Image 1: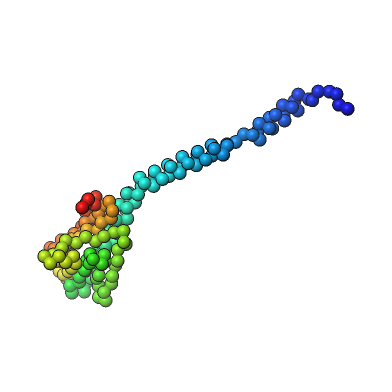
Image 2: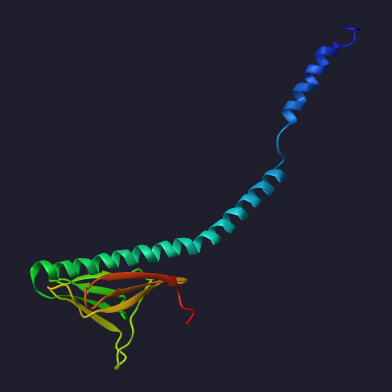
Length: 167
């Protein structure tokens, strides 16, 4: 039978080992940390959403500008007029021979000024000498828009970025 008291250093080691095993985070602490992280992530997504929409609208406008430039180049190189139709009701561009069609994403809208009859289809013709009929339209997202304009004299294509109209 053992009558001596337990060794003090051995007891201290056991307590130390027990404390090490008990260290860590409780489930409540982890849950609170995850909730804070989720809130911050949601807040960041809301703040970045308008910026990403602006980039998406501007990227699509640059793509449309390159289609316009392609049509203009075709007129210059072939020596015959080339045209592009901006069809607002169908949210598309039609150009080329044979006809090619570019549909815009549903999140974006082509806005064309209506003519006297209320028709919202515009045709821009590029001529072999570099001029055009001229014209312009707007590509609009929810909070951002980009205006595209074609100069009638030079056929030059310009983009103008801005906030979408509240109307």
